[in-house]
Length: 416
Image (cartoon, rainbow, N blue to C red; front, side, top):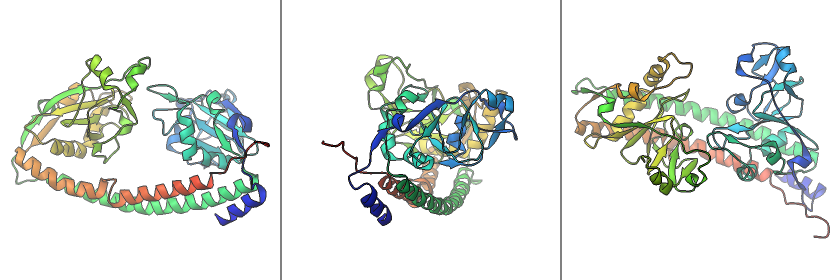
């Protein structure tokens, strides 16, 4: 930080201009590339969906290619451009960006835009688009309900600090080094956490399958009321003003036992006016479509779910936590069941879900087993303790340091 401070004192002691991104560069939309066009060799290409899943903050090579014919129908990013995803299922991922530092042109798909900055380094822009300042600014320009979007016209309004290039270079150098160290430390912690999770899974499955306990087999549909959720229409603006949890698959992650908050909330009054069913402390949520199918969690408060989630409201004479742990242990089975329907996308419909057979001991044993599993579950998975908390703390430390480096006193107009 001391070197940065010296440079700021020397080059911009009165502050740094904060300009709209429209003033600092130009935007153009990608076009023309679909997943069916992917090749293992050919013209380099980036599909917007890969920005979420395969790329970091910058790239010099692509993971897929397209033919010259497809490429010629597309728009290209050049060295020093920033490729930005313009649609997402959630606000957090929306506008995730990758700075293109490859020697060749790269074809860019639709649902992404290409930003060509002036007097800004591509990496500096990419780091800024990952900062807290940007996330706060971005929120007021997001549109859409099921699919969240941000337009290039709105993106142009977002302000970015424009320090001298030598300061940008120094910030990028520091953040590159810090990012590498952070990744190495996280990899070590993740490896240890994965080992702990394997131990936990073995312990959990052993308790759920004890040979000296008597079990009776029931169909899942007989253990509670099973239903599937739905989503308010985009035009129902008043539905989205409230505190009722609205759970989607993106709110459920592997190992997350309870849902405490969701990315979006809905109005309890609106839900009651539509006579929609709400779910509370006797419910288990199970994602029922797509690659994330079969993830399970339990709500901590009243709410509704979208159509990609099956809900079972567990009967009072059963232990909800026991059934939750059993469903978690059967994730791979649920996935295979969802893939067996012949469709291209895994889907577990309500009928098949209800017919799943569950071996259950008496309720006293269910409670005892669930309590034992919960002890190790907390150690391994609870975000407030153990390794996950350490990983989260390191990420917060990194984010704080990054945000400090990207925060500048704003230069005031002359005479103000």
